Length: 403
Image (tube, rainbow, N blue to C red; front, side, top):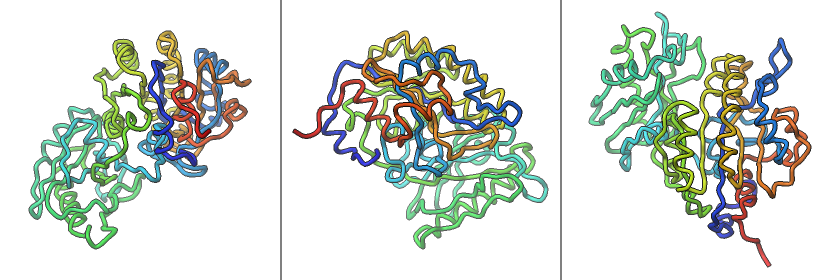
């Protein structure tokens, strides 16, 4: 949170009837397409976002720090006001919590991707063609409930090609490396211990992966498994404790539901479509004073390198934006957790456009919600951890500091 501590924000926060909506467009930032010279936001027809930007104060945000490429978890934690370097949650814990799996004290969880390897063991597709959740559930059944060296391993389907692995037993340690190299054309990595205490856990995971390779060998395209983000369930101060808010999360992807749950938000049941999320928002609007709404498909299309599809998702979000503005929230934030340029086919270090709308926001001269326009906005270039204090201030939920 910039240089401001969560403890100070906790001391200054107060409860009011005003409402805040944080719309997170995952992987929103982009880079210019070679043929058009425009980013995805610049190529998209987004009159509602542009109109909201014209009434807002705008800028660019860095999820972690300039030059650092953020993962989804740190990118979101920063948007919630948590320093993502100090407060860290492994991806596996988020996946397990996102599907409501009851993690126990001492459990270790990892996030898994079913992937495709060739006859030489080289990864050709990290996501196995994005197989269906039904297919991954069947594969998890084949891997579930193994016992290795007295330790139980549970393979849990999450969504599409994603799964979670929960390891339960005595003397486990999560301080181990990933097996996922996060690129194709190489073999899966051998898991290594980062400390002597983790040697046993690393050995168990490597034995599990050897068994998984044998079991999955005939199941093309998902004939192998990649693991990353080993961790235990953390203990964080909650959004309610820090900001005195009654927060709700509207997200369909399990990882983001888990992330919201980890910081103490109530995770609402919703369908997978953006329209479903808007319906959930309207139904629940009177019951909460803070809403986190997550849009995933922008990130997925960026990672696939599909520029036009990412543009179409942005236009889809723009069409539903009036359903948010029509509720007249006191504060609206439109932000991204990181950039995912289709040109790079992955997350990048580039700062992300952000707008903050309220009747108190001191609008600037930005008229298009794009990277090139927002760089001239009144917010300038800020840390993503500064967004929540600004939202709270614009909602008149922060008391004066000092005499």
